[in-house]
Image 1 (cartoon, rainbow, N blue to C red):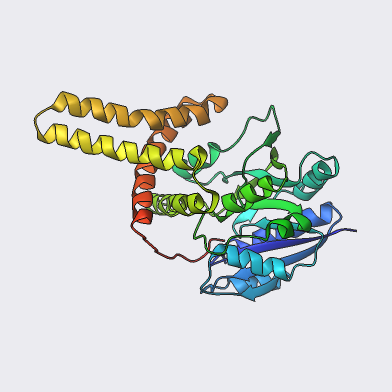
Image 2 (cartoon, rainbow, N blue to C red):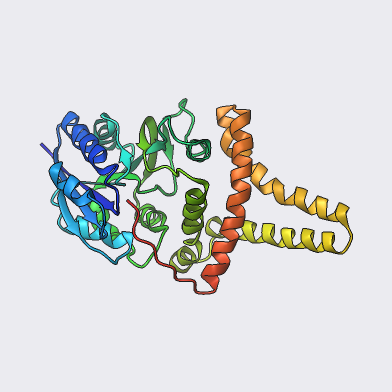
Length: 322
């Protein structure tokens, strides 16, 4: 029987960690894998660590560090041939490990992740934002350039080959890590035959905007790590252009040119529309297109603000996400 080590970073996730651990252990049992559950806590102030121990996890406490360090620290004590990372608020399906280990043994890829969805009770903006990442069920295997660490599976040798996560990245550590895996020769595969459930969805507009602002702050650090590339530059540059067009629209309105201002506002809405169409056409859902259009408009403005603050050496710290 092979052994899998499942590393879960956590911060104040008492609401979700029991469900996460129970589902992970069940998936390992179904796949006939010996399972080692490792929770690395970032200094939680709730009952999360105690609950994790009750579900049989090893709990390591490492406050005051970023999320890459949590994952590296958990991996340092892991003893499994297989290595998985999941977030503390993600519920994996029963066939998670059975499916992905079969794909690996069939030489389909080396590093895998399942698509993620929200439970039915999530608010519309959290549901729409998650649905944008879901891929067509007509093609269940999707080679990708990077994978998120909400759920990630590989053999331990791949982790060791690239030296683990960058512990200096406040966010975007998953993109950096999996892009380095790809550069080292690993084939990254997103799979949507089954989906994982994200129970830590944003329950308020303020939370959604705060998380997006935080996520967008990684662009400058990734450019420093991986060098200039169109893929990493295109979104922050697009967001800066939207900001400049907003400024021109306000200037035109203040100077008595309302038609020019209206035209500029129309132009600033087009990037969000293009992004929403690209992500929603596969679902053939007009309401989803309209929802994503508005969300992308907000996100573009948040991304511009985050990029400018990064250029100004904004170093706000936030506890690691679970």
